[in-house]
Image (cartoon, rainbow, N blue to C red; front, top):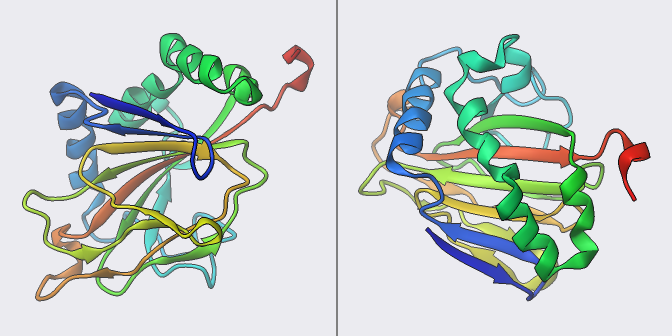
Amino acid sequence: MNIQLLDNPFPHVLIENFYNEKELSLIQEEIKFLSYPNKLYKPGVHHAGTEGLTESRALHLEKAYTIPELSNILQVTKKTLDIPFISTIVNKWPQLLRIKYVDMIITKVRYYHNNEGYEPHTDIKHEFLTFSYFHTIPKKFSGGELYFPEYNYQIECSHNTFILFPGYVQHGVKKVLIEDSAYWNGDGRYCISQFMAVKNSDKYG
């Protein structure tokens, strides 16, 4: 695991090889299951607010699984709120202290295939965002970079890379380009997104 705590152009955490082999295997098993037709939804069907911003399909996992323990992804991604990890962030950036009090997370799996991206936007109602990226090895597409137009900054979304940043930062996804690949082959760009907020503010401070 290669952890980078980056100040510029805004506070963000970038980690390569975030999930270990066992965790990665569990995630990929569920991604493969979700890659069958009719499991990921078009924009606006299962996740309101994305209409007109993206053509990519996604699934809101907390809605899909009434029993969270049945989802490999919901179990494995709990590690993003491990105390040592969060303490490292707060020690670096005291202004991000509220991450210690996150008590509401929305988790989505999103898939980008040919000519699909995401227009720049903010997620201001969520205090923190995390994105984890996955794709086949070797990678069969180009594009798909996470970009921040206000800062002229972008990040290549390599397999098993993780990023955390504040929800106020405008971000988008450049279009993925794939040649000669059926949609449900799963040759595109997968992202597990976590939208984090402090719901019970009484406990903060």
